[in-house]
Amino acid sequence: MTALRTLIDRGTMIRAGIALALFLFAILALPHLAGADWITTFTSVAIYSVVALGFGILYGRVGMISLGQVALLTLGCWIGARLAYASSMPFPLLLLATGAITCVIGVLVGLPALRLSGLYLALITLMFAGAVTIVLSVTDFPNGGGGFKGTASTGALTTSTPPVRRPSWATADVAFYRYTAIVALILFLIALAHVATKPGRAWASIRESEPAALAAGVNITLYKLWAFALASFITGVAGCLLAAQVGVPRAITFQTQDSLTLAATALIGGIFSMWGAIVAGIFNQLLPFLFQAQWGVNTNYLLIIFGAGLLQVLLTAPGGLADQFPKDMANLGRLIVRLVRGSKPAKEPAG
Amino acid sequence: MIEVNGLTVKFAGVTPIDDMSVTFPVGTCGLIGPNGAGKTTFFNVLSGFVTPSSGSITAFGENLLKMADYRRARWGLRRTFQTEMAIEKLSIFDNVAMIHEHSGAKRASRRADVLGAIDFVGLDASPRTRVGGLGARERRLVEVARAVVGKPKIVLLDEPAAGLPDEETGHLSQVIQKIPAYIGALVILVDHDMSLVSACCQTTAVIDFGRLIASGPTAEVLRNEHVMRAYLGTEDTGEDVEEELL
Image (cartoon, rainbow over all chains, first blue to last red):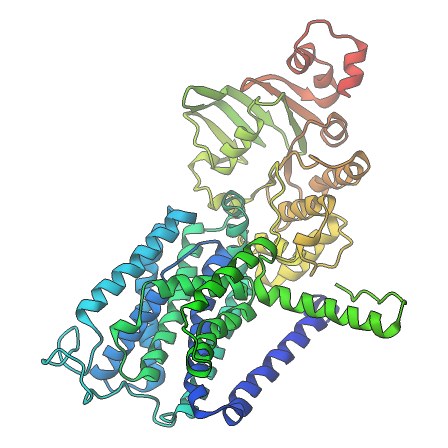
């Protein structure tokens, strides 16, 4: 029991408690507080948090930079739509099947990572993202037709195109938002179960030094591909959710540069922490919504903000906002305590 | 026991290990030599990072060179690196547990084994402390804990005291001396600190330009005139030099 207590400390319990409270607030209270037009944005935040989580696993945990994560999301979206039109399997099964197929594709994309790293891997994965955009611009998304592409004979998407189905009990936007948030939570827990155990430790050793990992008996090939498999699986599931959220996905809405923006926001949020992925999801989806729909500002200005944020993170806070924000708050708290107590020096918190 | 026979390693135009034959008996053995003598290259051959062009290595009756690199840890080979490579992002416990997980040791005894190894090296920090926040001495001890967990057969220590001040080397020296009794492993220690080598090693092998130039009981080897010449490059060796070496 004492050994257990040395490993699961109070900090972990408190953090888990905060996470649970925030999650309950997000799915129970938030839909009532925010207007209907916010709900789809919240759903997108949950979906893109999962994509950022995949990026964080690859880069933050294993040290492999992949700039093709939104392209994998796009593929997941396509596969999810195709399977939804082609079959009548239950929605959870649809999510799993989409995740599994995206996982296979992701592992293939990850194969160069066994030989390449750094800039070269970044370039290869970005090329992949570009290729997905180009192929998709020709094939476009399925619209319920037959054949491999699943497009109806007219070829064009029309207003009569039936939307990708949602779970039977979550067809309304609010219910689907809750459904998405719960699936996202499950995906985060799956990732956490990896990071906190044997694969996570093996990944950390690979990130630190490949020779040292090899000397420790880590099968580097296996664990690198495992990371790609996990990241692609969760991104594929997120893609299927996106297909159901959008209803009628269009190729035009997915751009190659989205993968770059995602990488930037993931770094700003913090790639070493699960919180960072959520911050990244908020930056990636909520800010554009605020800019465009709420404030009427061109969203392209966001790229400047992301650029400045990225610079700030790379120069001063490599752990991103998820790491920096609690530190800043602690500093602020200490400052306030000092001001309240007058000249008396504030007590440093442990850790 | 490790028997090395006619080991030769060739990189383009360089021969860092040249027809080396040496035997390491059970216990703690020193491996010394001037910079560039081939010590780390020899460790890299044992780890499987470098494939020799000829020669053989038999360790406890096993042909080591036939084994895939990542399988050697499971078989019972551990090493530390000149530049300390404990994993910054993980806690002390996870750092050591990570080695245990790939060592083939029983899962049921993992917690006890890991805490035992941390205790063995005398780390007083809490096992859940992140290694990134530790000082040089503690990180070296984490590395030694990683090297001894899970009952390895062979422990290779590559300059474990590099960068440590003398008073901190003292504790490390005591820990290294206790390794053979703790897990019954054969320890090979590479270091430039002769007082550390003398304190820890019953036998010592000296290499220079990739060849064995002396081996035997440590005290005798350190007095060997070839050894002094290799280190100092002169014939003019006397008592002062010996003192300097020791």
